[in-house]
Length: 509
Image (tube, rainbow, N blue to C red):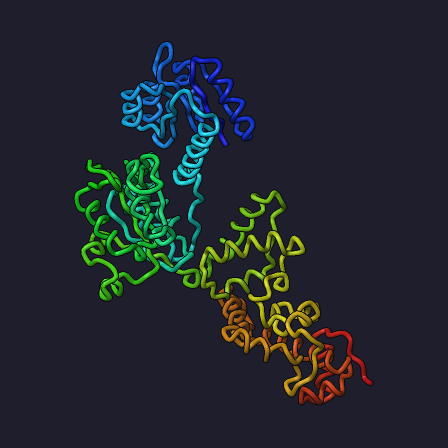
């Protein structure tokens, strides 16, 4: 956090405020005049600025004017005498956060500075620099269509509606549209309309005047003002309350709005990009979304594919997120084995790219080794892994069975008519209906075919036989004859299979 700047030509005022802030563990920096502070602003910025209004040389109002021209979101507290009413009015008109009357109560002064500090930190989180945003990754044809659309819109100011499932990366696309637009040098402001309570959303969008409602102790700029000259991204627009849709329509129609409690119209030079995971046509039909607003937003529609529609991008995204997570944590990057990457590529990922990113964060923290195998993944992703492992690597079966058996069953395994351990496949199928050994087999076959592998049936058949025979031998404690009876094959057949597949641990008696 940046320091709090104190500008006053009175040594005692500076000293008192410095000591009070130090007791609150808040860093400060002092200036004896406004000119020095203006010079410092050329290379540095404070978190909050506290300035006297009357000083030798330039006044606090002149300093306020300079600050607001260059850093409109920086809170400035003006100190003034009780009798100086005109100066107080001028300070508010110039955009001051609040004024502090002299002589002031020190505790109240610190409380006021803390409120300004909270406002400053919140503004800093909102106004992020688009250049720090990671590029969009994707080689799938569906993503290439998105890239082409961004390119065609690069010189346009037109309103865009982005549709797609939750977690598919709609905000990244919005940032890319801004970055490659004529407005790229101006702010990109994002607001999730579904995350803000209805009573506060109007103030968040349009700002409010001091005293507009209980708790409005200072004038506050809304998102439209913060995005002036740039781009305003309204996420989950389908959840916007109906009455606020009317105000948004007014801004899109004529470019004017009013702050809450305000009487002066404000001009908005803002490009609006909206996004939703909902079917707006259905919401219009149900009377939940204004049809005229829908047509205002739906000038250019850009559909973002789900991760299921771009499975070939999963290995690329996985490696990127693992590297990103390792960098954030200061650890070595984890590597995914080829079978593990193939397995991930076959998953549904209902949470899309966001779910994959969270999974990579989990892997970075929780996976035991540097090379991540299928058994190292969260067990809710591999519910049947105790019986069907990386089919292209059959010799890992015993290892995975031993690592997952107790977790999956919760008790000692007993025999059933299939030859599998009780509490594995049957229990998993009841708990995870969407995942079964057949769906895992299908995913593995799909991945092998996509990679252009040959003799797929032979390879999968050998893997299947290896797993089933190992399970039977484990159940019969290595006795080949009993295992052959359980599997319904001859003794000579199981002996030959054991030799061909290189299975250890079998015995004649």
